[in-house]
Each structure stands twice: as structure tokens, then as C-alpha cells.
Length: 365
Image (cartoon, rainbow, N blue to C red; front, side, top):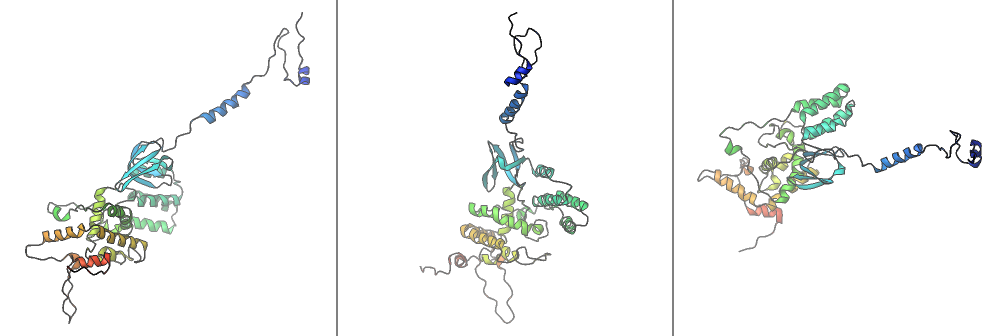
């Protein structure tokens, strides 16, 4: 009938073409295998390489908060705002920027930060529980720290260090609130604001205050440290000006303005006192002691108004006609058989100049 002879499967095999089976006797075209098996891998390949990257945990969080959890799970506190691919962190001591790829999460407060860090931990591992407890202790979450140590003890009852840590935390107790002040306490109990140079204030915030929190706050921020009272400031807590000024005022009250090397702040730092069995700082060669000493000397050198304000307050609180000696320079009774020495002028410029400018002779007028 003029139709081409159908091609057989055998002939296709001989020529290398894919085989086919004729479906009717009058076909005019060839039915070939579908191309779906080839298209599916191509579509999957395109989907994988053209899909947007999955957002990181930090990308899915809020844009404003108070605590950043960095990639090492350490918190960074301040007034925080997400701006583009970074977080702007504003603190009392300045402003910094943290790249978003270094951040795990932005939290509203320390409780949310703890829950996030805890959610990443293996809670069936007692060492992880102790790590969480230390995280809580360093960031002011005392009750949570106790709970984590108790969990560690339950998981490993015979572990002596865990039991010892639990006893320590339970005995130290949570921070005690400041006692309520009566109407007559405002004049003597109020802590005044201290104006220092930006350098002195910044060094106190980032260097001196952390030393005080580690070495002194366990007693002096819990009502067990006598007249020297500190306000607890956690490394991850929002650093506010009120806390900084309170601690700054307390520290300056322990500084001998006329003879800074004899300041109680420095002598008590390396001496055993109170109920402690060892000094807060090991010795005068320790780096922490040198930090305190350098700050005291530099602050007095750069802020002469401190001595002027102290003299003014002393004069203002003294009865008319009475001369008061600053507490740091109280007279001591003379030894038997010796005459009492004449008290030195606590505000003599000679001592101050000799400490900071060497023993130079003053020009004669």
C-alpha cells in the first residue's frame, strides 16, 4: 500500500538505536521511551542550588533586645538593635557592633538567654549540668545555678566536687536586697554621683569593677562586708550608670587621697580579713593588684577635683570651730616614752606631687 516497511526491534538493536514495539499496523511514527527519568534529576539539581539559604537562629529572632548570645554561648548585654547584617550594642562604656554570623540569638533578658543555652545542652550529662550552673553563677542567676548543681548531684551522687559546689551555693545564698531606708537615712545613706574623666570611668567599668565582683562581692555585696558595700554587677547584666556610680563611690571612700599607696582598697585586697581564710588577691605581684593600684594612682593624678570635693565635704560636716581629720588619717596614740608626732596636713600638695611627679624641689617664690 505504499507504506514503509515497519522497522523491527532486531534491526534497531543492530543499528544501535533504542528498541520499540509497534502498537498498530498502520503507524507512521516511532514511539520512544519517555524523558521523565532525565528531567527529574535536573529539576532536583536546580532546586537545590537555586533555593535561598536557610536562615540562622539569629535571623529568625527579634530585632531588639537586651542580651546577645554569641557563638561561644557567652552573653553580651546592653541596648541591642539589629541593623542589617550586624547588631549594635550600646553600653555605658561605649558602643560596639557584632556581626550577625557570630550571634546565636538575641534575647529579651537573662532568663530567656538561660533557657536558650539550656536548650542546647545535654541535660542527661552531669558535666553539662555543672557547665550550666557555672554559666548561671557568672551571670547572676543564683537559684538556677543551685537547681542545675542539684540535678548534677542526682545524676552523679558520688561526685564530691559537685556536692561541695552545691553546699557552697546553698550557704552563700541569693543576693540580699538592700535594707529599706528610713526618712533619716537619706542624708548619710545616699550615694552621691562622682564625676571622673572618661578614661578613669571606662577603666573602672571594664577593669576594676570585674576584679571587685570576683574578689570582693561575695561578702561586700551580700551585707557581710562591713562599711565597704558593693552593688552586684554581673558581666552579662546590663551595665547601668546607677550601679557603676554606687560602686565607684564605695571604692573611692576606701582610697587615701593624700597617700594613695596606703589606701585601704589596696591593703585589704592582699590581706586576710573578715571570715575569709585567704586574701582576695594573692599578693602585690598579682596582675589584679597592679590593675587596682594603677587605676588609683592614675585616677587621682587626672582628677584633682576629688581632693577638693573631699575637703569641701569635710569642712561642711564639721561643727563651727572644730577641725576634723579625714578618717583615713586618724591619729594613733604615741608609744610609751615618746611624744606624739604632729599630725601631717592630709591635703598637703607635697605628698601628692612626690607620688606622681617625683621628689622634685619646688621653685622658690
